[in-house]
Amino acid sequence: MGDDAAVSPKDRFLTVYGRKPVLEALTDPELDVDKVILADVARGPAVTEIQRAAKAVGVPVQRASAHRVKVLAGNGKQDQGVLADVVAPRMRPLAAALAEKRPPERVLVLDGITTPANVGMILRTATAAGLGGIVVPRRGVAALDPLVVKASAGVAFRAPMLRCATAADAVEQLTEAGYAVYALGSQGAESLFDLELPARTAFVLGGETAGVGGDVAQLVAGWVSIPMPGGVESLNVSAAAAVLCFELVRRDGQHGH
Image (cartoon, rainbow, N blue to C red; front, side, top):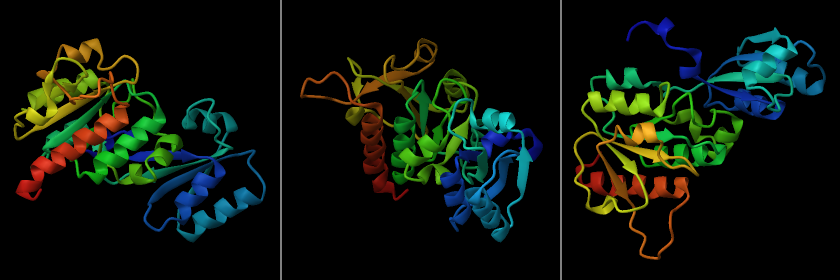
């Protein structure tokens, strides 16, 4: 995929908004800010400070209407008239990752997870566990916004996020690319701890209330569950993701991945 123009900005940047998050992004030496967009009505000392910080690191500042800033931040969010596009170096389209010479061996797919705190914690955990890819579909999952970044403790910027339209779309692409795709469920499935792991495996994590969606359920190769001898029905999805990720670390640890 040599054609960079084909990659949407949403597949390259995380957008942060609000005066404090934007200033923090500009002053973090590890982050590469692509641009800052200020509402033309935004004034005052905080705005001056943002302009000064952007200039110091050579980041262009564009002015736009307050309405445009609101739309870019995702309507109704507390954008305070300012946002910044931060480069997420490991974020790319799922199709691009699958076309690489060494595609990721272990992949998570988020399906219908709408709570930013859960998405952020899953990004943090999966990145910490060294997973090769976390599919965050553009539809049906919480938008990658400052709440997600905050819940990830800033790790979201470095997470290997793979983008596609929907979770079902991801499962189809992964299956075609030779992955065994399992859905994580709570009842009656094979135990995660007994599962034979093929070389390329993907796991779908379902939403907080509905679990894995019906369209996705029809496409997966099978279901796995985390054994719960204590008789509780299910774990929070980010807790389940943590168990899954570190079970993969434990297994793959023998090969020094």
